[in-house]
Amino acid sequence: MVLNTLYRYELDKSSKKYICPNCGKKRAVRYIDNETGNYLPIEFSRCDRETSCGYWRKPEKAKSSMLADRPILPMMLITFIRDALVKESGRNFKENNFVQYLKTKFSDSAVKAIIKRYLIGTSSYIKNACVFWQIDEQNRVRAGKIMKYNSNTGKRIKGGSGIHWVLSILKKKGKIKDYQREQCFFGLHLINEYKTKVIAICESEKTACIMSAIYDSYLWLGCGSATGLQDDKFIPLKGRKIILYPDKGMYDKWKKRAQELRSKGYNVEVSDVVERSLGRNGCDIADYFVDEKMIEEIESDREKTSKIVEVDADNLSEEEKKLHRLACKNPKIINLIKTFDLTDTNGVDFKLGVLGVKDRSISMGARN
Image (tube, rainbow, N blue to C red; front, side, top):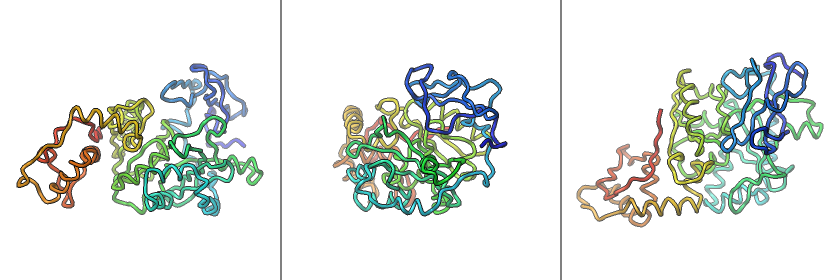
């Protein structure tokens, strides 16, 4: 079915991938001519390997569905998923590799909070896989993204598992005839519950879940991919303060995107904390805190540039005295304070210099 709201050429929304003309990997998404229903030549495609390849050639005079000029579909044309499917997926967490990985990093109560907050589901279609439900600000279920993770490392298992979509599976099983998927930010349903929190947007759903347990003063949303910052996704966030947290290697592109969004009236900043980290391209803000190898690298670097020294207690508030004692036991606490600009209970910045901290490590770095 071709909808008259679509542009002439549009990226294929199915899960089919083809050999990329640039990198030779089977990761290219091809353009479709909506008037004929046929694919355009393979050179008109976009590679999913945004960081390592980045190939993207658009048809002449075409408007891409991945950019700001993408048309917004009328609500009656969007296919929503039944709430019952979300409820049914909220079980069998022993068979959910992502949940089992979370348990290696957080307490049971923290993991339960993540599951409840984001309504994490377990797939009955892919064994041991997780379902990340995209639920909009009106609590309508837009999509269900199914991915499988290694329960020990937390890394996504690609290969044969790949990414699957609930609507595609329902069509394949004959439970729906056709569908029009229109995505929203992962976690968007939470904006009405947390009306005053700063919105933090990262790339992956996994990262949003993890960061919500590490730093819950922000409301963490996932955009789903490096190119998932479309204009229509931001409409429900109008008037909110937003900070983008791109993966390493994507800072410049997300900075440009933030500038475009600010020109349209959005209060958007972009953080370079990951870009300035020691990790490899593709690392994200969650890796910065929970990837054991990266933590070792950061701590090794911090040993060369930072130390906690004895201080004059008379210069410290009671909270800073407690903080100094904790920092002597675990210097990473100071890095957490610097990264997220934490304050004391009265909203006053901690005086890190007075605390005896000599540090040149990574700070939050949210910039325009």
